[in-house]
Figure (cartoon, rainbow, N blue to C red):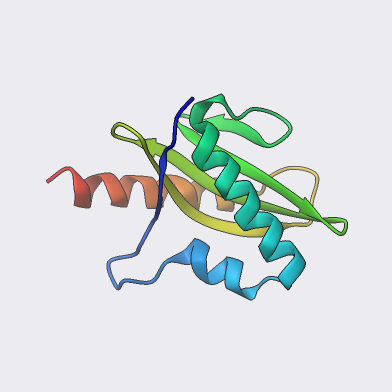
Length: 117
């Protein structure tokens, strides 16, 4: 375990989907999300269920809960000690929607393309 760097994915236009999403949440849910991000920063790949789950091919979801609401934030590990957080959504169904997983893969691919040059 160590201290990892949390990096917010930014689109080419500079917008940060996860930061914008977290700012739209209720204060309690936002506070819980930032607390869980701090735990992820501290534990990195050692963070497991029920807080984190590997989705597939290097994409993970941070599982955030408060007041009966379920929030998911996607992330991936990049280079040594960096965790890139991509975006989040309010989970309303039992399964994680495929479109959200696909968005995480698009953001990961975009990030790697722009940062591996």
